[in-house]
Image (cartoon, rainbow, N blue to C red; front, side):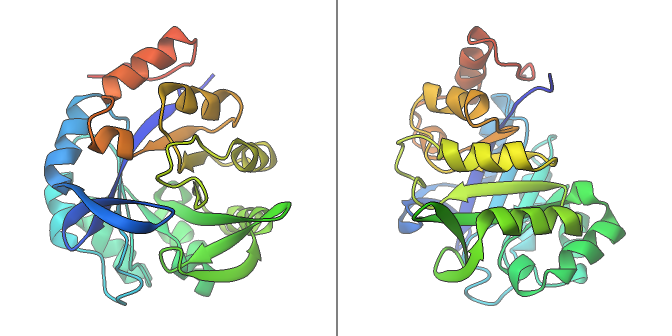
Length: 253
């Protein structure tokens, strides 16, 4: 069995790491470079860096911060926010990113997924899907969760896989920042339907939440934010708990 990945996420606004609840009420959580280094040294498998207001403000991702973070850590770095063109992707990869996460632009210009995966390889292209429950299904949201698209999450996930995405970063907007656990039903639905890896995001509050998203949700990786930023757990503690529960994780630093 492939090892499950523990991935801290840095939501960045105005150069600072922030965290909210259900995509609202953002609060300061730290410096992106310092936190990235801390999590790297604690054994994180990857880091995700999301410039969460770049799309709304119609500007490019902050390349200077990406460079600083990439020079500090020696694990894969995924960067998202404000990516609109192949040139934007090339600039981020040149700045030190290993992968890019497309969200709003993936919906408004799906052809970019195919074009980018052909140029840079599908392993570089992550599609981030922000999902909100609508009855028995889920709707895709864009622009930092502020705009519904009417798209069904499962159908959209199948489409991005067909277009060449290498991974899906799946965020439950209903669970984001609540610390009530991941949306296991949604995560399992995509994990069982698609062949590409699913990175689960939104809701980690306890160590059991993380183990459940791997076992019951069948996720390939778990995004962790609040419980790390505010010092409840360390990456090394999370990995230790996973090993005690017979969940394969990579050995930390």
